[in-house]
Amino acid sequence: MFGIGYFKAQPTEYILRYTSGRVSKQGAGIAFYYLQHNTQIVAVPTSSLDGNFVFNEITSNFQAVTVQGQFTYRIANPAHAAALLNFTIDPRKRTYVSNDPERVPQRITNIIQMETRGEIQTRSLEETLRQYQAMAGAVFQRVQDKKLLEPLGVELLSIYFMSAKPTPEVAKALEAEYRETLLRKADEAIYARRAAAVEEERKIKENELNTQISLEQQRQQFIELQGKNAEQEADYRGKALEKEADYQARALAKQLEAYQGQDARTVLAVALRELGANAAKVGNLTITSEMLASLLNPKTDDGSAR
Image (cartoon, rainbow, N blue to C red):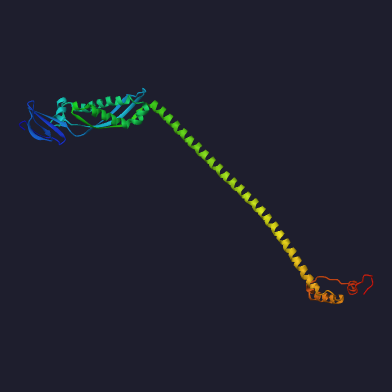
């Protein structure tokens, strides 16, 4: 109404208010009334923004590699950035009147690609595929050290490399080589396991054989000990029998001493009495008349009966 407008910026917007071509007010998140016919409003975003990139580069061994990543940045010097690019907005629609703000992430991407190329050209394909995450840190450090984004008024917050991929043909070759390596390692593991099993089986059989030999040796020693014991026992029994027979002979001799000088009939009567007392122990006994006659009438030296 009457050509007067009201503008209120966001806290993350740095505003430059131009009146008749001169900066009349500036600051972050400010609000003001303005005359529409002679006022221009420049809004520079100061919040952190993300950008994506995909680079196709050549490694030191002349192999193509595709690097995909993301970076985060913010406009640290909005007044300087506004002097280089057109951030003028339509206050009623709150849209930029030019596409200059869209050029900021592209310019940052170009700088990151230049430094990434320098890192990749010093590495082989295998090193790039293995070290792409560490390579992102090296690129970030190079951009910071060279202060490549200060002319744009931009501060780079982080760089991440999400992936690094070779061409499909090279990828298949690397996969085949890696697959063969894994299969070879698997075969080696199988052979090692079989060798270990054979070695363990050999040790078991060797232990069983040693145990069997030890048992046979112990059995042989036991048999020899049994033989010696049997021999010693037989010798002992023989000596005991000899002593027993000797003792019995001596006892019998002493018993017979009592009958020396006695008449034959008396001795015979005693013998028959003993025989009768032990009749239960006698199986069969035959005494003929001739035997009795010879015992009762022994002959003298001249052959006549007494």
